[in-house]
Image (cartoon, rainbow, N blue to C red; front, side, top):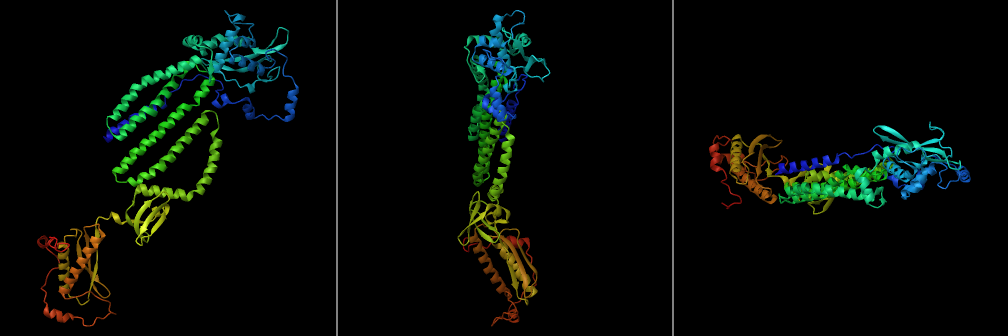
Length: 591
């Protein structure tokens, strides 16, 4: 099942990657505008102009009439182009024809075709050339340093089949001999050819005639309808695939399967529609204004942001389930702030990408954020350290809530692992709050993780204990340990390890099969009492420091006179161990 889930996840990521890398058709554009340029007001454009003009120069310009008087304001190149743009924007192509030099028309055209040529030129310029009005001359004689004849000014260039065609203005005499600026006859002769390359095409021509003239966001009404039809066709074509994939996940009848199904039917479906629609965007022959708006990729960024946020949510559910399977539910609480921070980062990055797409410089924003980020990082250094410490405690899990542990010189039970500090109830029944950064860096001994308790006493016998008595004690101690039902079979050792300052030392090492401290204390009490009985029976006793003297002490020589020990080995044979094994019940009388 895990393998099938991995294959499904890889399939979905492959679909998303292919969709994201799908190319978007484009045309060669001179000075491609951004969304910011499209929506910027004239005042904003002037404010962004790097040329500084003094107040005295502005006052002088106000006093000078730019160009001759003209009904259509064609005295200078800039006002002539602006007048043409305003005429075609309002749909007044008869007025727009007055800005064209119609003296040398292409074959088959007459002056009566002026409005149609004005319309075709408008379509060509809309789709191929972004005109920056601020670069056009305000001198009645035009630019004098552009390398063109004095009577011509360059508006821009339009490329067809790797060949550039100049869009020119020309200074021509009016009927009364006054010179004005119009689109040159050379440019007008190229308009039919340019329109064949940048026009609406056969379908677009029919639709543009069928629907009324209405433009919004750089698209005609028929283009909006065509775009909507493309989106509906894409949605209808991709609908079966997404439903099949979602059905495939719903078959598992698991919570994760339902979430994956909703993920496919929601953000994946939307992103697919947007990406494929963008791929066929050029079918509607959009203008540069519409292209600038769509190149902002606003819908695509929103859809991808939604997709990533939902993908993070899926990861949270998947990882939470894994933590539950490994009995680490306490770590789930850390996922919420971590994934919330990740979602904020995703939204912030998406906002920066969108600002960059629409023409704003994000380097200044990033520079400001860098300085602010340093200040915030310094101010929140301890908080960040404690949060990282919490992540370490949750992920590595040296202790969890309820565990009894030793850290440093303190012992207590963990009551809470917060994002800032860990609360521990000590043996004195007080609550100690330890910062996570400090708690995660010290040595922690998790006493609750022990599998059994160790019994490891060092028995100090009197110096006058004989070798026969030592062998007897070693043998009887081993018999006791093997016989006791609460002790582990291994390791189990009883050894005479050497000579102390005032004693002969026997080391006992074994493990009590319990994790309950009360049971452990009872078992070692029982073992200690039985061992004292064995020591007394052997005729010796626990050594005491030489400075301590007991009155009425039983003399060793007197005891040895009454008790004689045979020469015995301190080791037990396997048969002896098998005979005595688990013969001592604990507690007594439970057999």
